[in-house]
Image: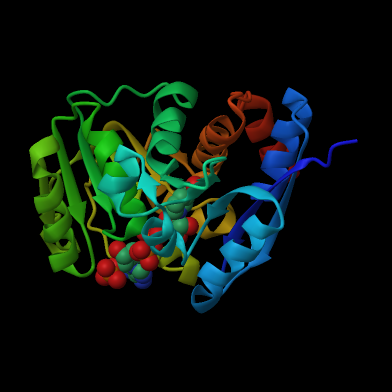
Length: 275
Ligand SMILES: NC(=O)c1ccc[n+]([C@@H]2O[C@H](COP(=O)([O-])OP(=O)(O)OC[C@H]3O[C@@H](n4cnc5c(N)ncnc54)[C@H](OP(=O)(O)O)[C@@H]3O)[C@@H](O)[C@H]2O)c1
């Protein structure tokens, strides 16, 4: 019998990753014969580890923190959204030996916002907190929704300014530091900072959330709690973590690798029930 195709997530650390569980459930659901593992790969070992994985018959990888930029540089050819985000979270090892790199984070977030949560983003005021890799990955798909305005606010203001300049041709986008956020209500606030990793919250003023506004943390689980709690106290109608985004970005990677689109709803429900 043919061995199942092999995929994996590389990260550092990676023990916490839910990707093996998600892809195993996708495979069960769709009847695809695949095995999905995780591997802790420090950045300096990334290229060697990818080479060894390919030599062992591996067909594709997910790359997570801190390897997305290295994956971007390793890929021979890139999807337009990976080019724009300067980061790759999905590698496909093609039969012609070409390494194809994609970034499914942005589309994953957009599917969670628009399809799972039913939000319409056109003509809305959106605040993105953070200007790192995750923020860069979501700006293109966000601006495609034609929001009225996207403001990027970051602890290091220059990084926000650089991102806003890079995406200026895609829509109405501006940048500032947290201190300049006074008295400006937003329909949607996306926390794309790593502050929650340290149990922290960016220093946000009161009055940032418009009536009916939504707070969304790209992190999920306990690490999202400080921001979601802030959102609820500040009057957000919906305050939700990034578990849906995680499952949606995985579904897009699964589709790229297998040509089959898994249903995400049952997987999100199973993960929430498990928590
Ligand atoms: N749900 C999903 O599928 C998904 C996908 C991708 C990412 N994410 C999450 O998104 C988060 C950000 O990832 P990333 O790749 O963008 O990380 P990153 O490139 O390291 O960027 C981190 C960002 O957080 C800011 N920051 C860090 N600590 C802070 C603090 N204490 N207060 C305020 N701002 C702080 C940094 O500001 P400075 O520029 O000033 O350093 C920077 O803007 C991660 O925690 C990750 O879990 C989730």
